[in-house]
Image 1 (cartoon, rainbow, N blue to C red):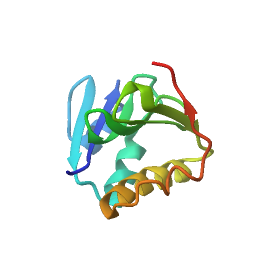
Image 2 (tube, rainbow, N blue to C red; image 1 turned 135 degrees about the vertical axis):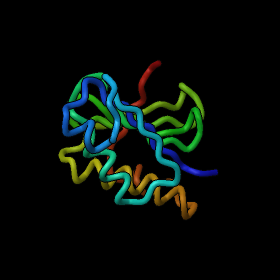
Image 3 (cartoon, helix red, strand yellow; image 1 turned 90 degrees about the horizontal axis):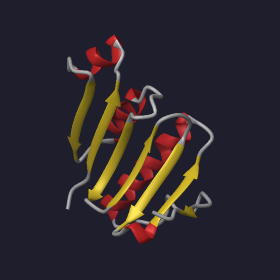
Amino acid sequence: MSLSIDIHINNPSEDDITKALSFRNAIEIHIYDPSEDEIIKALSLLNGDLESYLILQRSKMTYMQTGGLGYHIDYQEGSLDYHYFTEVASFDRLCDVFISYATGYAIGNDDDWKNDFTWERMEL
């Protein structure tokens, strides 16, 4: 199974549009089996708009996502009953978590990225 990134940027700036080579009111980008550099670049495209987001997806119901303002991260494992969130302090830390999630999945070690944070369960 491969990973994919889905990015939605609402009301992109001219610079965002140029980066993504898209000329719509929102940017939709899909990257399959992203590299570490692609993950960092994708996260850097988020513009702080509350409707902008990035999802690093293992399957339809198993993913990590961030978006809007700040460094809020959600992850879900298989169903809405297993949906959690946390906040990280910086963009660099946000990148570290997403890269660890992707790399851990690739090498079969899924839990390293979880251990550095306190995750709270979300009722959805």
